[in-house]
Image (cartoon, rainbow, N blue to C red; front, side, top):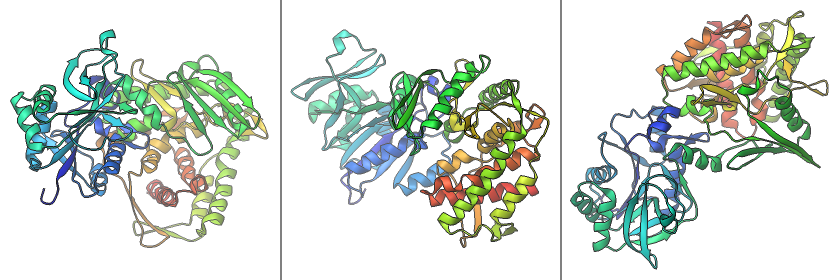
Amino acid sequence: MSGFTSISLILSGAFSNSEIIAEFGLLPPAFLPLGVGRLYDIQVQALRDSIQDAEPLYLTVPESFEVPAHDRRCLANKGVSLLSVPDGLSLGESLVYAINVVNAYAGGVRLLYGDTQIGTIPSGFDVVAGHIEGDDYSWAAINHKNDEIVSLETIEAANEMDLDRPVACGYFAFSSGAEIVRMVSQARGDFIKGLNLYNRHLPLTLSWVDEWYDFGHLQTYFRSRRVVTTARVFNNLQITHNTVCKRSADTFKMSAEAEWFENVPPSVQPYTARLLEKHVDGPSASYTTEYQYAPNLAEIYVFGQIGRATWKKILASSIEFLEICTKTVGEAPREKYSRELMGKKSFGRLEQFARESGFDIERELTYKNRPTPSLLSIAYELERLIPISHEEPCTLIHGDFCFSNILYNSRNDRISVIDPRGYVFSGEREIYGDFRYDLAKYSHSVDGLYDFILAGRYDLTQRNAYDFELNFDVSPQRQWLQDSFADVTIAGASASGTDIRAIMISLFISMLPLHADRPDRQKAFIANALRLFTQMKG
């Protein structure tokens, strides 16, 4: 503490409640998924924006929580020190423990709840952030007079008498670490009682905040998550309490996606988002689906800690969806779609990537000190490994059946798909194709770890532009899922079959030009294609 007058604490020393654990597994609230990161990413940024860069910032976690190696590195890079606190402590006890461990008695202490984010961190000390609207959960109501806090009072649920009182929304700043420790200890670890005692010695001021995002309960988590939902640049998402409106200048594509929802048979509809309306408004088109309060599989796979029992249900529901799709047969032979999906696209996009990036796609590469063919040679070999059937009929496909487009509802143990590709063949919109593509897209997430790359959760090493080594954190649960998925067979196609793996690897090659704005991600895709190709070759 030498040289510093204050510290900042994100208190996340207890696990989330049972509702959230059912969705994501045993996680402290600051580690809940948010976009392609965790809640602590925006919490740390908000605190850094409001304090001096040199001020120490600590994040508490339960002692029994094993922080993933990638998160340890990420937090260290952000200048955040982890503090493990004994399991079972109350909020007040956890605060006292943390201040004692870091010896933060002499200066101020800023405190942010681990399940909370507010738009702008209030300045100054001896302030309590307040917001006028609460929910039907237990809050600390603030009794005040002209923004001078009289007292704080725990209420079990919002009622008409409490609607006019602001609630403490998870940020506090104390000018004296020693005094808050003394008062909370005197209150036997009760944080709110300790605050009231502190207020008698060092008066607290109410600081009003407009933006308050609560991630402490399942309903408030999904509601708060909406504000940070990400979309690619060619999409514009408008999300309300009940709906998701997707809009794009690509009117043909938007119409194709909407028509996919309209045209899938009744047997498939329980596994899809519910289409509410569609519009073509001059230069743009849009469609609206019902907003679902459920996580997508990418969030669960990359950031969650759910057990095998839940993954078995997810995998079973995914298989059910794919099997139903294969029973919805079109009139044209599968061959018509196979070549379009798996041949022409890869080579055209690979050439585009070479033109735009200057990467030599004909130069031999190295992966983990092992020579490999060039990207172009790999693409040709992958194409030869994908048999094209002249007799099999086409079937219904989603077209982008990857984890980020698959939601899981733990209440009914069923997946729900969003953002279908709405494939266009020969200028016509289609719901049919080669079902192996959907199976390969699923493998793209399970085995290809696509979502880990999007989240930046990988380590890439290069000695030169054509030499790669890629590593991911080890996870027993991930290995178990990959082994279980390898045993899956859909309509005679094995998830671990050479053709499915070849299609899956080709996806990483074909998407290279789509990420021209992220050269770091393009390098990871190349390295991942090499990783998977060398695994397949043995």
